[in-house]
Every structure is written in structure tokens, then in C-alpha cells.
Length: 231
Image (cartoon, rainbow, N blue to C red; front, top):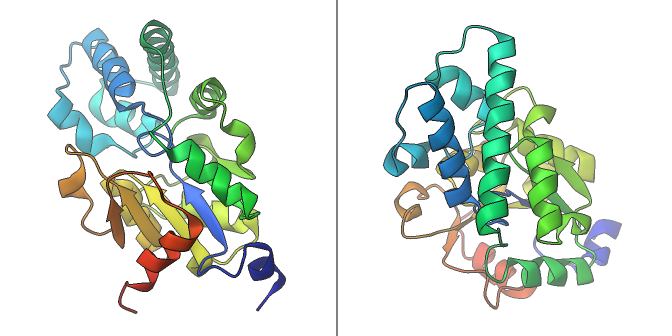
């Protein structure tokens, strides 16, 4: 048993890594509305059904792939406008954390379990929404979209978070809500717990565990769920 395990109560994991949008922050609708408005600026339409597969993909990739941008300057302008639109939606409608996730995060911190936030969102957006819900200070490490070269479903963002936490990937548990994030976690050799909604459940089959809610979830019963996974 190493020192890290003693500190974390000798659980079946040594660190927890959270995705942000849809996992910690209830931001999917706000993000969709911002993208929809940006697409409209370029004469493009975006339905919610077409938006769902984009969850977890870095903004610069979405913009460069689907919008008629001619230069890096155009790309930066588009991403800046998207953030403005997102801020406008949040200011108008407000934004909340996913139900019960704050209680779960606080319980993990009581056990001194290292926590990381690994989000495909840009750092400016991440800081804004995490400060609004009062959860930014609970994370020991934050990796944002611009901190990695290869976004999800590549494993780079989760591997970087594990390295910054000084925990081997196999001892990390990732919480995700999107198929691309689940794929990234599994490619990083990490256990993955998916938080599902009616909209996303059908995309999350590769997760080790699928839950409907963070309600009553604690470190102890998380280990019970993870130990049921075939080796």
C-alpha cells in the first residue's frame, strides 16, 4: 500500500478525473444554442440531433470542420463569437451544476482524493462556468482544450491530467457524459463511469459503469460498482 492509497482511504482508485460539460455543469443546452447561433452566422443550420455527436470534441475542431473558415484569424474570430454567444445564453438563462455532483465532489475531497477537471472547452469558458457554480476551487488540476494537441477521443487530455496529479492512468477513474470522452478514457487505460441522460444513454456503451445520477454516490459505493467490472 503506498502513501497515496493511505491518504485516499485505500479505495480501489487513487484519483478522479471529471469531464465538465454535461458531467459537472448542466451546460449542454446553452452550448447547443451558442453553436446554433454561430452556425447561423455562416449560413449553416445545426439541429440538436446533429449536435449530440459533437459533445466532447474541441471547439476549434468543430468550427474548422463545419464552418467555411479561410484562415486561422477566421477561426479565432469564430471561437470568440461562440464564447460571446455562450455567455449571453448563460446570463439570460443562468447555469447550474449537474444535480448532486457538488455533494459527490465535496465527499471525495473529504477523503483527500486528488481531483482533476479535463474539459474540451476552452479555459475562458471553463473558468466562467465553474466560478458561477462555485466548484472551481475543488480541483487540484485543470486541463482545458487548448492545453492539449489532440482532443477527445484521443486520450491525451486524461493522460495529461493523470501526469499532473502524479497518478498512473490505471489508478484513475474518469466521469464522462459523452461518447468521445468515454473513448478517450478507455484509450487512456482508465476506468470510466458515464453519467447518462435519455438523450445520451445510447452513445455510452463503452463505459465501464453507467449511472443515472450522482445522488447518494460516494467513494465506497463507487468502488463496489467498479469491482464488479470483469478484469
